Image 1 (cartoon, helix red, strand yellow):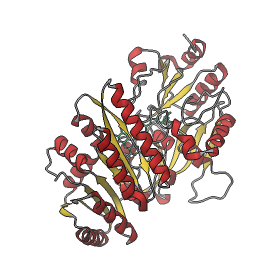
Image 2: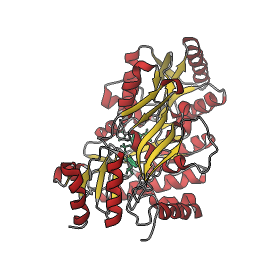
Image 3: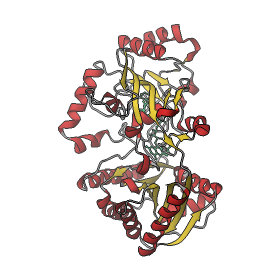
Image 4: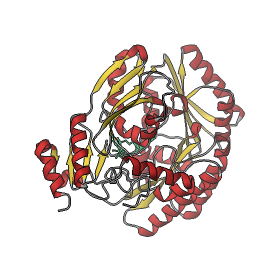
Length: 458
Ligand SMILES: Cc1cc2nc3c(=O)[nH]c(=O)nc-3n(C[C@H](O)[C@H](O)[C@H](O)COP(=O)(O)OP(=O)(O)OC[C@H]3O[C@@H](n4cnc5c(N)ncnc54)[C@H](O)[C@@H]3O)c2cc1C
């Protein structure tokens, strides 16, 4: 077995927290999307930074790959140990280390999930805002530079991670950032590790920015006869400076998916789902001004979610979009696209993508965080149907080209992993080679999540 020496050494200090059992390897070899199963050689469950450091140092010395695993919800095969070695499951490092309410910060371990953090914060009047739908780990969210429905108001992981503790590829432990709201002290290493997908270091602690829980929330869903009117509504709302906390687009296929999964009777038309946060007065005023824009753009079927239960039903439906899409075509798997364009080009990007999907013959509901210019199509592929997978990949490639032509990016929030690696040169040109140099400088033996983000010849 390759890496036997490294695994034996790891077992000597991890004991039964190094597992080579088939079920555990398989559980860490699956992804949420279309990537083939790739079990690692073993799964390690560290409990402290010192253990992570010792595992990584041992693996570096013996040439054994280490791929961090948060909750495994990433969509581009990020957490799969494609070159074998150890899957480093961070779930036992899941504590809130401190909540500094007066500074609106929390210090947490990487295996803590965002929902668990928010449960802990409930009594403090504070919240952690980044909400990718899945109950992902905060380490995984930092590693993918995740965002979600509320990022239009509160920012992405880039904006909400203030500092990190990181184990480097040789086992050294460093700290980046500080508790200060700003700093000019040299290179922004926090920014470098956020979004590095476990290829530059293992995050063992995060200092996160918190926000006040809103005093009042109003949410609504409204339908439009055509998607252009929905997009024009988004642009007008942004230009008028109405502070949306969420603004999500769902096309007519998406509405049909929601109806099928939730027993709702949304008209099968494009929709916007919105939410406003503020005081009683400001949330009501924002909602009223938004309603006026919708009316002007010809929107109808305006439905306010007035109670907390109505609101959670609304967002549960939105967050359940991915499984609902898969259920819409039984026996399917998803290829989830993720382009992001400047808001002024959003209508063009959606229009061209809709035509492309229609021509491909695939079913692909479009759903997105349109306030950020970010949208996804969940391309539903019959399991095992190689021709459909090829069609979907070609369509995803054209979407990425479209995003770049319109001044955007190949991935707004899901990240690169394996699935988008081949598109990186197209987006970054020479800058992708600079990324590879950074990788070589920080991980010269290529042991950290090899095969992802950058191409480095060993
Ligand atoms: C239904 C559904 C909806 C989603 N919606 C969104 C969305 O709206 N927005 C969005 O951004 N994403 C979304 N995602 C994708 C996914 O939830 C995010 O990418 C999330 O950030 C992944 O976190 P995770 O804990 O599952 O990480 P994993 O999948 O376990 O790992 C992701 C990457 O991070 C690395 N990693 C994990 N932990 C660490 C660590 N401690 N140190 C260093 N590297 C580490 C892994 O090696 C891997 O490369 C969605 C996924 C699903 C299934």
